[in-house]
Length: 142
Image 1 (cartoon, one colour):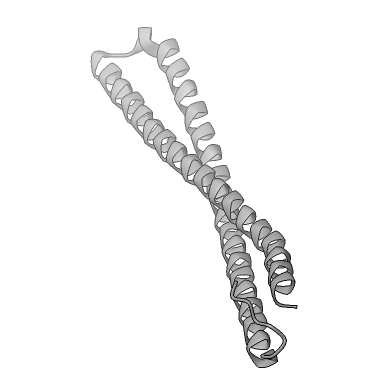
Image 2 (cartoon, one colour):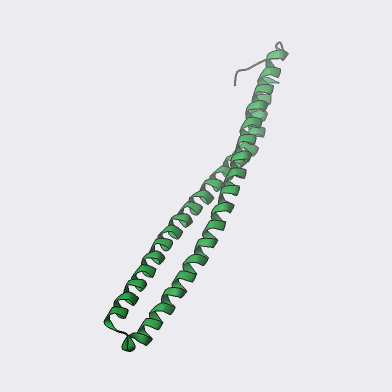
């Protein structure tokens, strides 16, 4: 900080106002970023919940189809066995794709949560740093 003694109160006022504007802008910027991150995290959590339900339903359908296939395998013709096998393979591929998508969304949700935590730390730095900088400025110039 540049020392501004009592002989220049206008410059001292400008420095104080500039510091206040900088910290206020940083505070507002950080609050907006945290709000945006919260909205994004909420949306991702909703999508993850929907996709988890979808994966669970696909797993249940696949297990039911496998049980049914095993139970009726003795009565099936070779063509029906091939068709049943292809249907099971198709269901497995759909389930695998949904699981990969779910894993990607969970990873993205986790990254968003970590980023939100970082922005909260920025907010705490702003709230703690502002009075410290003003106190240092006051100690140097008054």
